[in-house]
Each structure stands twice: as structure tokens, then as C-alpha cells.
Image (cartoon, rainbow, N blue to C red; front, top):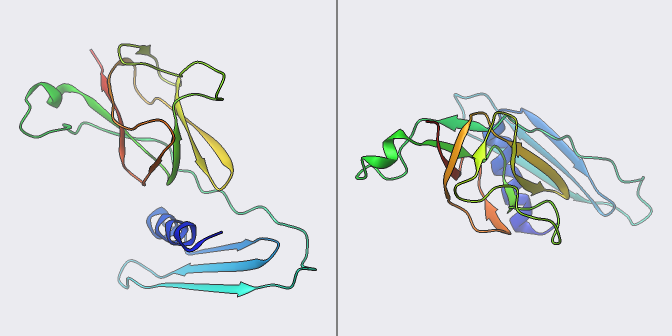
Length: 161
């Protein structure tokens, strides 16, 4: 795990509302503690462990439901005000298809229903399916395939009509 992945993990934990997360891998251990809302401090401990460490333990998986809001993509465009923005619930890598040899989950113009899988986001070697919270038609895909995404980053514009 490099410093960039650790920084992304810290940001994710801070935004998720979790107060403490411990992650143990073969060669290191990370503990991230956040305080209450009044104080904005994050403490991170990174400890190197000997190579004969205990077996690898799974990290706690905190995945929020996809956030869907009625926000326009561009305030100047009146047409986009009627679209619903589907945002990323987690930090990770955005993929439009389940495997390299499989078809895309959705394309521009695809009709979707509640619970349909729109994409997957890989976070720490776990692939999280992002499901639609609304029914409608995909108007625009805002992220390129295999791109990193941040928490609450817009992914799709959906026309609910």
C-alpha cells in the first residue's frame, strides 16, 4: 500500500463518519481514528510488522448507499436541472463493465430501473456494485472507464421522466 492509497483511505474514513478503522496487512498495520464533528483532527498510525506476522485480516468494509440528488450538472444549463445525478458512494476505481471481456452495464440512452447495476467501483481489491436508486434513462456518463473516483463525485446523469 503506497502513501496515496493511505491518504485516500484517511479521506474515506473521515467522510464516512466512522470513529476508528484498523487495517492489518502482511507487512504493516494502520489505525485511523477520527474525533467528533467539533474537532477536525485525524490520527493515523502506521506500524511496520515483521514478515512472520499473523495471517492477513480483512479490512472493515464501510459502503454507503449510492447518493442520488436533484442537482444540475451545470448551473448555467436549464436543461440539466431536470436530471438526477448519481454520485459515487466510495473512493475507488470506476469500471463500466464487470470484466474486460463483458459488455458495459449501461450506455448513454439505456433505460434503467431501481436496483439495476450501473457500474462497479473497486476499493482495496473489493468490487462494489453501484445500483440505481431511481428509474429513468441515462443521459450522460460523467467518468471514463478505469478512472479513479472520489467520494460523492458525480458519475451519471439520469432523466427520470
